[in-house]
Image (cartoon, rainbow, N blue to C red; front, side, top):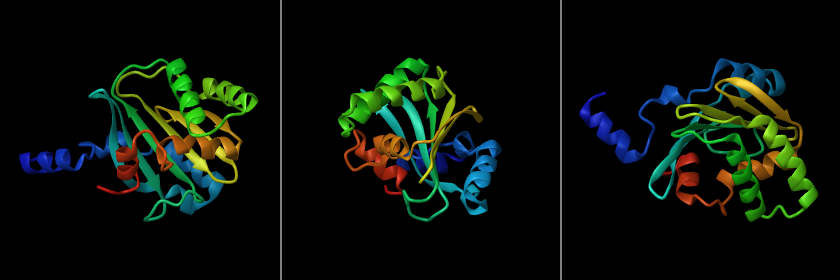
Length: 182
């Protein structure tokens, strides 16, 4: 990559290696089988980096078949981790965010926590987790391109992806970049 291109990529906050966040064929095939061929033609909509106290946690990219984000159509969120994180921490952080965004029913939260334990493995630096939203159905989760689980609960899927995509997200700059903004 030329110095100018590298500088531009850094300035725009884009991942330097787009293939690092590419959707594996296994994700596209499953999505096409469940939602039709058009759904399998996802392309990157936006991307950004999640940092915590200056430390890179992950690179995120949002994939959609539409030119603009449409939560009523299938989409995929790719998280490529910059550090090792235990699956239990991914689960507890997700539950904390679901509570913060308004899910209050303890029975629902316990059920969702059990489902997340089944789909979130420990991640190593460089690993990717992909969440696929299937509106009116639920969500699929992949680790390193391998399906880790399917959650058939559209309320869960809507609440889970709101962690990144809701206006009340903890990371509004990342949300703006995922949605294709600067």
